[in-house]
Image 1 (tube, rainbow, N blue to C red):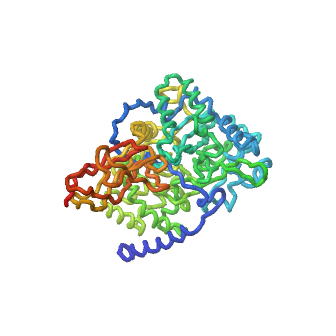
Image 2: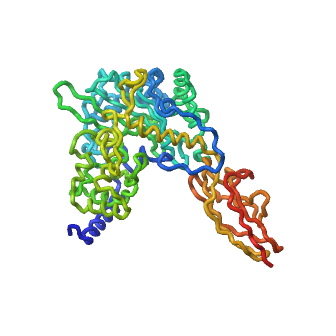
Image 3: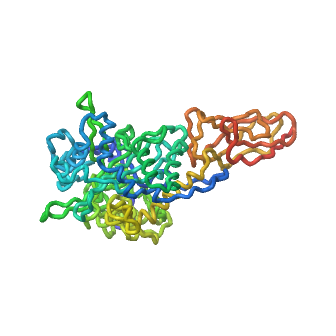
Length: 593
């Protein structure tokens, strides 16, 4: 079978059968199952889609300072965003029912302990649930971090301070159903090389006007861009404090009990980056990354208790699934699925190569340090040859790519938690690209910025690679008009008989930020000064939404005038009757007797 076309086909056929079986099964373990949540990724939303070109005159560009409008690391601002402030706000959102702020903090870390855990935190999830598995993948206990669950722990809620606020508008979906993520990075302080620990709150901010599409998020974008022009740190602190804890007018606050998974689509999450070591003489533990959802447990009615529930780490398949010799029944299904993602990973752009991972394949945790371990994708993949190596190579050949199967797996690893934070740091990922460097397992640090001790340092990857793209996304949005349209194509005859009914087809693209819909009074109408051809306007279908970057084809019948001659046919998109964007090119139609 080795190297034969029949062998390749058998590999693909077996994988397709296994993939179908995996997609029909529900993989459940301790915590939140894949069926209960929408997979999140740091590579999604409008940041992955080049903006459509505008046809309207652009406003003057707004100068943006990335360290004011995208990544806030100034210590005097961050002093207002410490761990106690965040946890207290969450408890207040729950009307003070259930756990106190200190108990909620301790319950987060009690998940790292074997059951039954702390006596005052009964019935909560633990690392030993379902035989130390989550999603049927290994979930180890971490007693060094779990020790923070003890009421007497010297590392407690007050040990955690904010080291960064992050604007992730670039993660807003193209349909504007939400306005992206807004993050707070908490770190254990003071810094100690053997006692590093991080909690990252990643709030998905709802769009209060989803019917407008991305236009509903404009106040948020204006808020962040306006910080660049504010030279007063305390003024910026006031504004950020209000944005995070009170909300902009019409918007919910960023820090809300419902923005970290406690919503119908399970949007938002809390992640941890763990490196607390045990007592002197204890064996060292590796950097470990986990993900959680903050949800309400209402089993003890009438009150509900907020609790952290372990969840899978996203865009982070279990590394053993890359092993061609794996006996895990999900491996063949994953490997077959992975072939469908090679094209996205082969895109030769550090900011935009990407792939999607069904949650049934996502791991329970990610060890970002141990060489050759289960989370070392390249070690698991091995040097080959194997049917999996050949299948990836065949797909690359079909795409005309010069990348190797090793490059593709290296890129998948770079998008995992551990790969982005350490395994791929400063290493090649094929196509002449090198993954940018982290700052020793983290991107938002608890150490001083060498250039400005009044700030916390960020990684070279953030400063030089990722923030520039996010800045471009923000600038592009600010330059985009709310209403805009561009012509794509049309089919209009140039000769018809007088009085004849005939069909036309016109395609336009939405290049503005407002969704086209019937409630938004968007229609296709005859251009000013041109005949209506018996059809003055063409509405959108009830319930239809045409979002930024999407095309809409209008196909409809019109009627020629009853008298011969030459008449112009031209249409334009309108809002409440006022035209906007690029009209269709005028067509001179000859009307014959």
